[in-house]
Image (tube, rainbow, N blue to C red; front, side):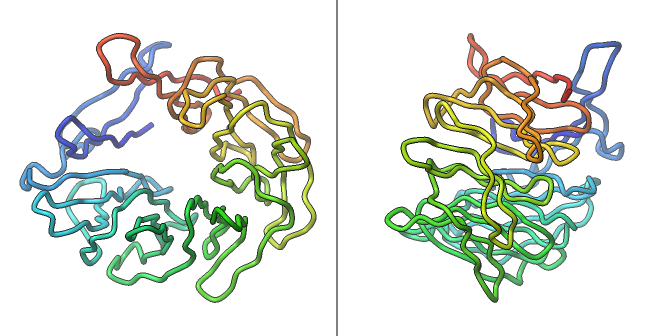
Length: 292
């Protein structure tokens, strides 16, 4: 299992987690390995954010922001840190990026003045970008190789699938802002049903929704394996989150994953990595648990 993270100087680090017996350990090696590598030492004036592996594990994308205020770029680098492609500089504030399922495109969330906008770039040539949707707040996820599903807007909040050419709004009333996810061929998202916040599954075409779970608080979700959704809840939208469960959208069945408090969590094969805040000394720790 590979990781990409930022050090205290906001330089990109690449590493791998290996099992030593029953204990996970962070393994570091030489750049040529390339199990572990530093990125950006030649340009310490640049800061990086939001590193993300491609699905095939061969490339990492991240935002690179110049300290001198000349703008930010999206940079795509291969795992050996040999080849690199970057977008044109922009003064928009970069927030989030996500690879398309086929790794050909990257969707970006950025702030432009008082609005948020989502656009996509060609991973091989990030200089080519296409606007998709704007609104404040704005959360999105990939539906397939071409479409995003987005939860956007405040005064008129919508959940919609979008491409550069068209937009389809999903039926229902969006609830507390949560990033929608694709799982088992359906969009799983939070809707408001009367006074309740409900997790629902809706086909991207807009087929009527099916209720999965009534939420007790705010939810954070990421796609799990085999069409499942990893979800955790919190009384506070800023977390920490707890009660991490695997949700089967086809049945609504919940399976316990972890009861540890989490700042973030993500799948890694048959395991789940839970990011926890250290109780003393600051920083975070990584807890690796079984997805089952």
